[in-house]
Image (cartoon, rainbow, N blue to C red; front, side, top):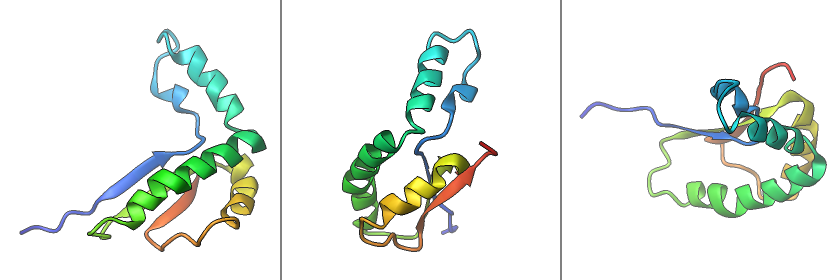
Length: 102
């Protein structure tokens, strides 16, 4: 049987409006959501949800032969590092990655 690398990609607070065209009906809403996602309040709440559900689920997988990359913006990485201190340390296969030059 061939080994397959599994990567779980989570877009934590990155700009996903770039994934749709400007004419797409969701473009403006995605742009507004991206702006909100840069605030400390949004990050605190979403980190709570992320850790409680997504990370908890990933920790309890019977097969941990995967890598989970949680994408975040450079501008908010400091806030995210502060928030991570409130929780149990992430296992080595789950990590945050700074995306873009924002």
